[in-house]
Length: 176
Image 1 (cartoon, rainbow, N blue to C red):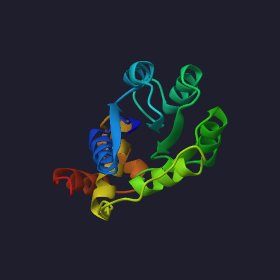
Image 2: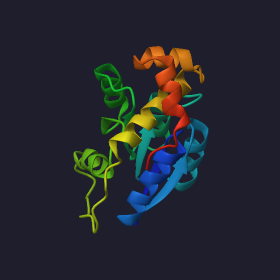
Image 3: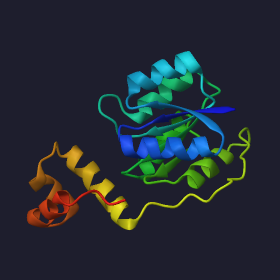
Image 4: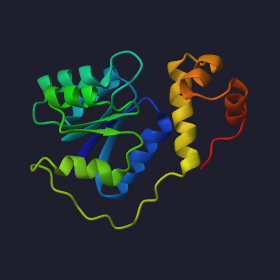
């Protein structure tokens, strides 16, 4: 069984990826930050890792660099909600197999791993449904709000919407 490490500070996204990988026959290890990920890499030595770029504390690029220094055979795909050519280039330069924009689904991630010829993929037994547009919007709003230290006015400015509109969206339950 292939072992994959999932590093993301967003619990919902990490758990969703974990379930999707497990349905496809992968053993998963989960970490929410740099420190947890390094402990797992040293202890379990996974063959693959999916790493979020922006996390509290140390970022994903530093994790890529440090992880590959202790486990050079580790295949890493970097995910970011703030995709840019510069960060993708930095991730690849540090040794990541690929860089993808969030929210990436399981098929995109496996395809990114398969671009490296050392990883073989298995066909999925069941089709995984993509999250709804409302769910993607909710997750994006939560990321921006977190980046603004939960300041609604600043988050509304970054999102380009009125503060009251953002407040209304936040009072609704998270979509499924």
